[in-house]
Length: 300
Ligand SMILES: [Zn+2]
Figure: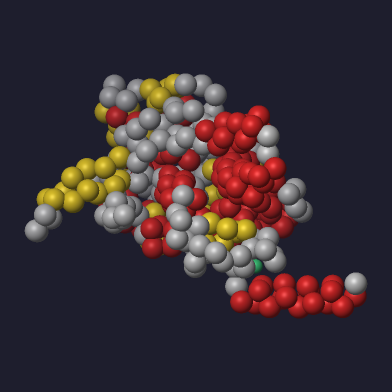
């Protein structure tokens, strides 16, 4: 099939360092450190690492592994790829700054279906607020801060304002929300894996339960526009949130027959298989598994 996501306009920003910081309301947030510097990158260039990294952290959470170990893995993920961009992932439009109220899609974080735009921003700017003023539908943002922040805002001046805000240094995400998101993805992966592994032994009722639980996994589709390139018109996908990129790439690899997302038979980590019948993530794991098997056999 033709890769319909060939043309994506997506960029994302990661900062040189992040920290876990407690807000006044007692919630732990992850946010760039005071002196961190931004780097722009294209998430689709590293989509495999993004998906595999996210699901493996989600698996650690489901297995209730040591909290310090989990937090360390999350901080590494954030330093490698940036925050998830939950602020622009759950509203019905990334241009919500043009409206007085934000409307939210079904999501695991906020129950309200709609809320005042500034009230919503409060969830993601718990420490210092960006200099925003609103007059009816019009939002004004006085970009301040260091040279890096100003340059970044200038580069993104044609994008929806919420997207540019999401990539600013003052932006923060609750640690628990990030965990919830990783866990959700891993749960979907495990459900789908177990369904096919255990298919032969499942009752019809159990099968329906599996099928229903995967239905909960319904993200909003990315938007697109048509661009007239030199020789032909092309479909260009717009992504305004890293979490939406991960969600889409995850769904694509889950349904990919040639290079499916798999659990390694030896180390139990998630990986993208290089061929449909692969069972190990690496030759190293294959060798280790065989050594282990031979030893076990000799013992018996
Ligand atoms: Zn392995």
